[in-house]
Length: 410
Image (tube, rainbow, N blue to C red; front, side, top):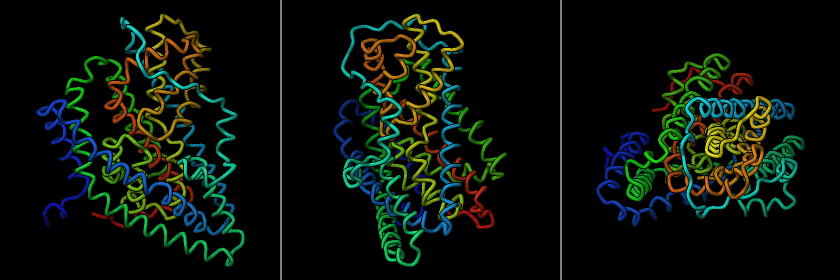
């Protein structure tokens, strides 16, 4: 037991991924019977997300000291994340055009999984401001929760000492939530083992074979986004040692890959930001939770790929002007997607309609991909999380909240 707990958590998670794949291969569909263990772990982590976000953003905003810093930090964070998402859409469209993943694909009958109609952008923006913040908290509406928490933190800043009791309460709540998260994270290897085993047991190790080129394009696109676009931002703009950066984010990467949820990975992302990358508390407590609602690089690459996939299946010829419209539409869809598994897949109608693919045809694509989407989702969740960390690192440099003198925690 001592040796187990002395081993770094990310190494235990990596071992669980390998053993889970082996167990799924050996047990086959019987491995689905242990999936509840993984689901239980994810529920434990997600149970902490909303109270943790509320408490950490309030304390992070209050720690800024000057209300004007909230505007600069928030504006820089949101602007960078939107720009990164738009670039990721371009990467997906470019790879889809080059690799032609939809060429020669024939879809049969439309299966289950009809996609939802995407809301207009005006409605999406309006929904960020909650009419009833308690209803938003109960419903887990992350962007609304973040907006409300930032408003409370700003109010505490403006009233000064009179708001200190509320800030102290939030600090105590954040400490309790983080302690619980650390306890629950010790269960991560067991949850990851069960999730991987169930996925491999249900679909087999060769699950990517049916969609080889789409899966290959997604892997290439996410690697490009992480090691070229995001790494360039960290190395050139943030001037952060790139080797140290990638060593520091390993734990968050493994958690994102195994849980396929940006929201469930949030506690680990915040821990990595503060303890491994040494970003200041205002950044780790405010910018990271803000980013979890809109950091969608992997989703953006995937949406761009699926758009070209659909165009090739249905023989849609795209003009240069169509690509510009698609970049805008796909960026908005990716930004509006929830940080939960397969969220973007059910919101494709808003983009597909731009190229003349109707709801029934979109439903056929969703039904074709859905059985394999769990493993594809594991790939594309990683750049969502790393985008948040790359942008937070850059904003920390700009805001003077980066301490490279401290040695990373073991």
